[in-house]
Length: 80
Picture 1 (cartoon, rainbow, N blue to C red):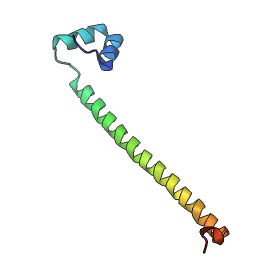
Picture 2 (cartoon, rainbow, N blue to C red):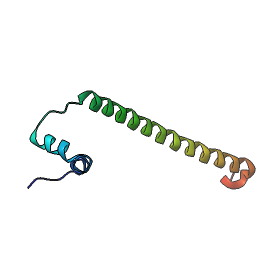
Picture 3 (cartoon, rainbow, N blue to C red):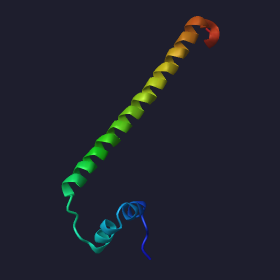
């Protein structure tokens, strides 16, 4: 029994004929567009990872600033 992947469903719903050609093993005629799409998705994934890291860094710096401010305002918080 063959496993049905989400990409197969998407391809079938988008164009049944293209899905059938793919299932029959016919090569795609738009390899350049597919390669460009792959590169675009790779770039986008890298940007998402970078921006997620920067967002986390921003939150950590904000938290550190709040803690430093509280220590400055309330020096006895640490028991010194």
